[in-house]
Amino acid sequence: MICEKTVIAIITARGGSKGVPRKNLRLVAGKPLISWTIRAAKASKYVDKVIVSSEDPEIIEVSKKFGAEVPFIRPKELSLDTTPSIEPLLHAVEAINEHF
Image (cartoon, rainbow, N blue to C red; front, side, top):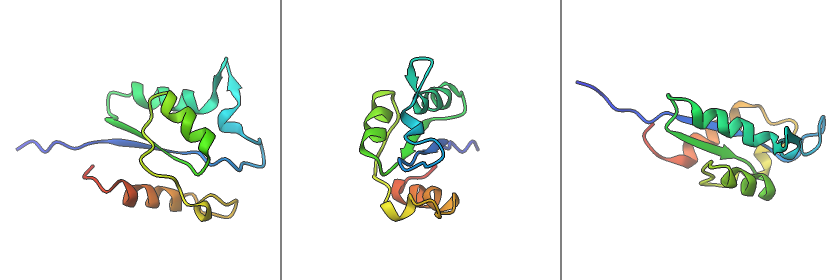
């Protein structure tokens, strides 16, 4: 029996980076940095769905423009400098609420 699974790529992109402010929106070769990440995930033959987790309205808008799904807005408390990296991922998995 073959079990079909949906493979998702979750891209975490907070707007408050202090090392390189607004880094996800900075242009690299003429496109926002996050667009390259979305493009790479969408090009993978193993990934069925690309989801961006962000609290930033501009990152959300750009992510959608480049073909990512943004089915929820990440809570601000999961977008702090002190937030462990796993927390936004766990939130995304719970928020998606699908079998994958």
